[in-house]
Length: 445
Image (cartoon, rainbow, N blue to C red; front, top):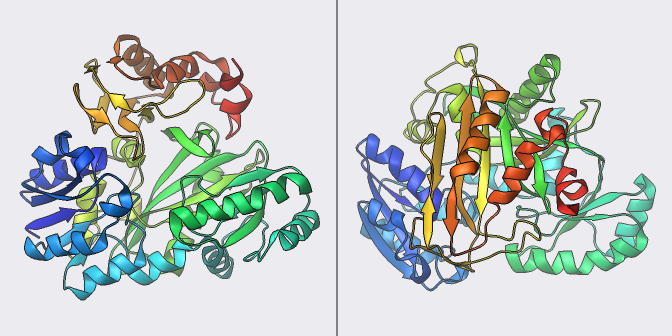
């Protein structure tokens, strides 16, 4: 593999370029008009303008991306996360052109991309699944099913992710109000308005397991990540190992993730997401058939480069390690630094005047912006990921506190203050939190 096209932008494009550069692989970047001055454009070997800022005219423009891939004669396409990363049609078009897609097969992407199909597939595999419905045709059917399993429930879109088209409902009135708006959002974002209902698990943990498979039947897991610190069903902080899991449950959830992956003959990097109640009962939520935003904390504790593993698998090579050789050490926490108001969480796009990261041993920065860059209102407003690691969770928290004490970002609002508050909270320090933690505690202050 000598040259790959990165069908993405910002932080994840930089992340992929970094590994490719180390391995001597040339990279082709694509960028919209809004991103022409971002660092990744100049870091790639070559870069191509693909259109105006709305994603539909640039990063979702399959024909233009495929045209550039052929013009550049790339060996492979890396989709990053978001945009076309879980689009089976895009995967098939790449493969039809004789180009390697760095990810699982189109069939797996398609099967796992539809949450209703994924639920059914996991039930067949014997993986525990949250009680829920199949596709719901209308609000009347949704209300009938919700009363059958009792409120509260989660109304969810079958397609997409990122919390879009997802809403908690406490009663018939809330469900009736949410159904059409959620369905319309799902249609607008994913072109698919299929909806379903799941039992809401109160005070839950969101635990996911990193998996990687190769073309030779080898599949391993790289342990769990705890993604329970969320606002509006979207992750803002992740850590590994989870401070909540017993060793017995850690083994069981890893085995469940492998069972899920093996059932669909999974290849390349992916994540199996679970929701867990306070008694450590866990249920399958969804499978993400791509690299996750939070993959660095796994890299830091397991000591591997997941992008490098993706490239090896895409070339038909064996996984570098067997399950018994994968032994995590230490503790790692990732903070998602967003251009947003730290209390209302509303986006705050604009020009970054200064961006200074203190240099602290054991702190990794995966950034997509620098001083002078502008955060566009058209895309996800994540500026950078700050990954702190230490021998213990306490050491990682201490490094996080030291980082945000000396960190500086001016010109736009950001959520650095949220992390400062969070790290000082007793409940967080004790590992005592759930997916409703921010809503119940910090957001009320």
